[in-house]
Image (cartoon, each protein chain N blue to C red):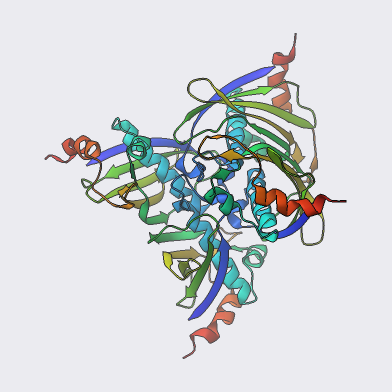
Length: 136
Length: 136
Length: 136
Length: 136
């Protein structure tokens, strides 16, 4: 399994009038966490797009356990539990500064060849980089 | 079952560099659809908050079938399939102008008493208004 | 002078924890107002991009007079006071339902040829459509 | 004069279909820069709100010189050029990783007493903290 962690400071823009982080904003937090997970592997999502593969989201699930609030310094723990094939799945947990679990998310991406606009295999560099994490 | 429909025009702000509606923006579309569903019943979410009940989201699921694109005039079909109790669940389908289903969502809200900050029963006016749709 | 009007309902997503529309969200409201102004002329911004001209923003000014709030049905009055040349300028006023002026904005766009990535003249169809509004 | 710097990584959520950071998103970048400027003084905007003073925006100006793009690591340089009184003004410059100036912004905030909802003096702690930067 591959694991990573990243931090996000809640912006005022992301709160709503309940004083909570608006429920739709977690999707952007997960995106930051995915991109930083790749960066921690030495890869970048931008590089995939520059090489003609984009990865739109197929599926999103969020559980809202407790609200994140303005100026909270969140920790997002991210896991890839299976080697990617046509799809790539990320698991996220969002914690506040005192270690309380606020939110859980699952995001499934699909690889799309930008020329053909059709699903394609995961970029070889991604599979190769992840492989050692899945040898038991 | 209660059903309603509303339209949303995709804003440039909501696109991303794939040329798609960013995946996190559907949550705001569902919110608009929920609020308009209530308005079509003669109710308003604002009225619930003004009366001390807020309805944060507990659970969100989205399936992204096809991308919505800039300037698309979307139709969101919304269903409430069960009478609300402590929770209230909405089902959404997002269609483009030629009737293609682009996206499906489910959102579960919980009623919170703003004074006690604890879960509470659904506002009586909401249950009463929905009741006739569930008598068979 | 060309004038148009459009309505926008404030979304929960657009509020912040002050209970105001977040100050950054007016830019998206102005964008909606610009696009609807074009649509009222029988044109569309999408059409310009499909024909190879995009119109990024050069300059933005906003005055925040009074806050817009959740579920307000806003009226945005938009004016084009000069025929476009290399640039196109929009003036916006945002009113609430009882006619109180909440916000004023000015947005300057520039025409960019998407192939050369360089500034270019305003699309001929736009200039022609606007011309009658500037004959005195 | 008080000066500070902060970094922001451009999120996919913040791009639009031009492949640029959407023009409305700079307002949130300035907000992050303001909050980090305060944090570098040992203060926090959250603390002001917790003490009953909020600071809505009165005025915003942005100049868009060159586009910021996905995954750019931006540096935002922020200046406070005058001691705050009823108002507090921030100047921002946004640079990309190779030091190119992309964007300039000015934001004027007003202090509002949350109880009376009326303008009030700048929090004493803010004025005291800034004072040494304005002694010549």
